[in-house]
Length: 142
Image (tube, rainbow, N blue to C red):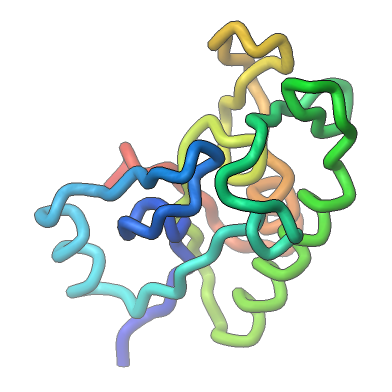
């Protein structure tokens, strides 16, 4: 039986990015993953009730703020909880998440200034999954 892994839905080609697009990985990378894992797509921002498209958001001082200044922390936390629930439900020990995202980024995220500047840190979902013992990697690590 294959191991199970969460994967950001945008990496599979689902149009759920903030701008309505996706970040589909190459067919080669996807085939490699599918050979080893049963992939469970997740989009924490959608699970948290945010629309697609939506105003871009970034983490700043423990909060998640939209570019227009709205506090969307609760939506990001709700989505993270949903992703954790699915990981536990399916027994996933790995999550392959979209790098630099305020939800899914692992190790680096945008710094909250909307200037394209990266800073050390994790997105809300990546942080929660890690706290519960689930390994998190970005798509460039495939």
